[in-house]
Image (cartoon, rainbow, N blue to C red):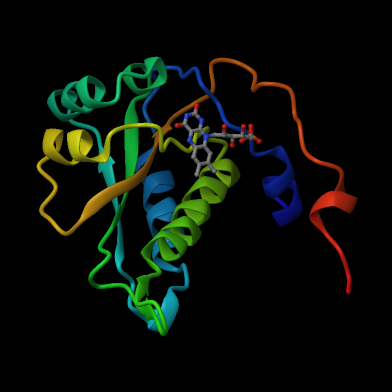
Length: 168
Ligand SMILES: Cc1cc2nc3c(=O)[nH]c(=O)nc-3n(C[C@H](O)[C@H](O)[C@H](O)COP(=O)(O)O)c2cc1C
């Protein structure tokens, strides 16, 4: 798939078939994640694929979204704020920027594989971390179901380009 087709066809999918994700596709997605840049190349991020029915059930308890119960697996984007580069001046950990880049690599690679995803951040982090026994200071900063789409996305809706891009 052409890069711009991947970018333009990717949409958030909120209903999934049970069909499994091929192992080779998952491996290519993981390699796309590990190719992501990070500040000072600290790589303070990890991708975890949750496939075990027991762990998926525990995740669903902490993040009760229908599509998490439906999908054959859920991808977790873990960040370690202490390992990440800190911005001079305010010592702000840049982990969420690194994490966002890594996970968008994942989301776009999944699209290139014909698989569907949906970024999810609307959960209580402490509950998800506890449910999956994530060792601190690692924490689940985002997650996404991964599988084959079982429904169309919501209508496409973006601000006009003139509001989001300018040349100065
Ligand atoms: C950082 C981030 C967090 C998001 N969290 C959620 C979420 O918790 N639940 C959800 O259904 N969608 C979530 N989304 C998906 C957005 O709602 C979606 O990307 C946006 O509406 C644009 O639609 P599209 O992805 O189909 O183009 C999130 C997206 C991003 C980038």
